[in-house]
Length: 468
Image 1 (cartoon, rainbow, N blue to C red):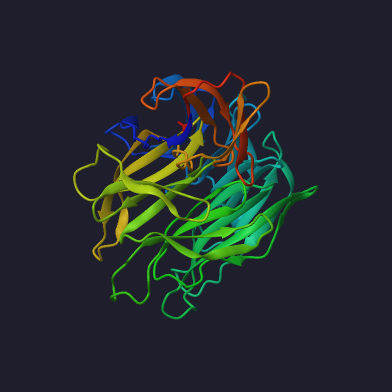
Image 2 (image 1 turned 60 degrees about the horizontal axis):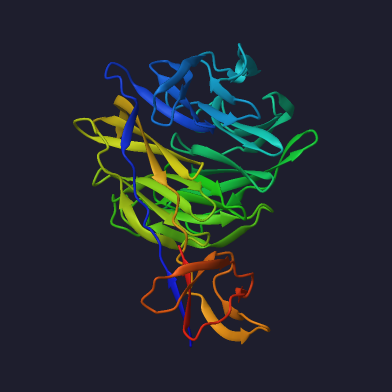
């Protein structure tokens, strides 16, 4: 007698412990980028009035003396870091308004851009791709000035001339571009931002993007793409990543039809193909009010979206599939230290070696007489390792046909999830014990597989397929 069964099992993701990265109570500290080199974490950090790169172990312990960069311009941060073939490239705006660069394997810095009479130039982002690196900056006005891009070679040196991406229309002091993000993927670079435009009625904030291509004489910019299907009543910095097929951009959306004076601040997203086509509908990823400051990274199976919930003060995170559908429930980060009084958390996320590293800036807030944020009275930096997204539960394998083979043995035909490894086990009794007879990996696209058992078939033999 032959019997067939199929079993699947999985393990839920678990969060890890928060550890300090920069928590000197005597100074304001802020980390604006992290990258990995083997077991080393390279952290770009602002301390007091200077930028430096710290070289850390995975638990935040120093590995080597920090690389001093130089004096920093005033906040918001105007620096970025990206990996090279060897080491990392750091770029920053100095207190003279010029943009400087330094390679971690070198001994000195170089001047990339001198503003001259027009300055200062404010670094807005840096991304590394197969075609080189793209530096994005804004100036001379930190908020309302034009946005530019420059292609750099693998050594961090300019290739070609700067390209202006957008000249934001300015009707009043509030018009301008909110902290852009630049991300590489699919052989291209995407720059995305939220822009305030006082000419628009009611809701005056649009989410926009530009696709960049590396040409032989520098970077080539496509047209400005409008990602938001409807304007927002408020804006904040955006997040973006690349899932191997499309770019996902996530931004703050506040419904203009909500109660007057109420800032909803939910997190919406939309996709852009490497060809520069906006795809899919504007999707609500986080519908909980006062959710802002998104951070985003892709692990090969899912996006990890991390954000701060201002009302509760909690940091949340959740996995999302390529199409924006959630994978599992929202999770809350535990035991993140907070200062006394009002505060906010501005985070970033990177993926490497099967884990996400979240870098969390915990900022104490100061308010003006109108109740608006006027500055920060404290700044501490923490890190936490978060697990990669768990595999989707594999569909149970189904045995569809059993064929006896001459002179002995049998052949099992079945279907399962393509690409999933199933362990075939055998027993002489359904209660076990079970022994491993081999494994199969169903082929795409139908998930068909064939398994041969060459042993002579006893009178009673049971088979099952198990997916770990």
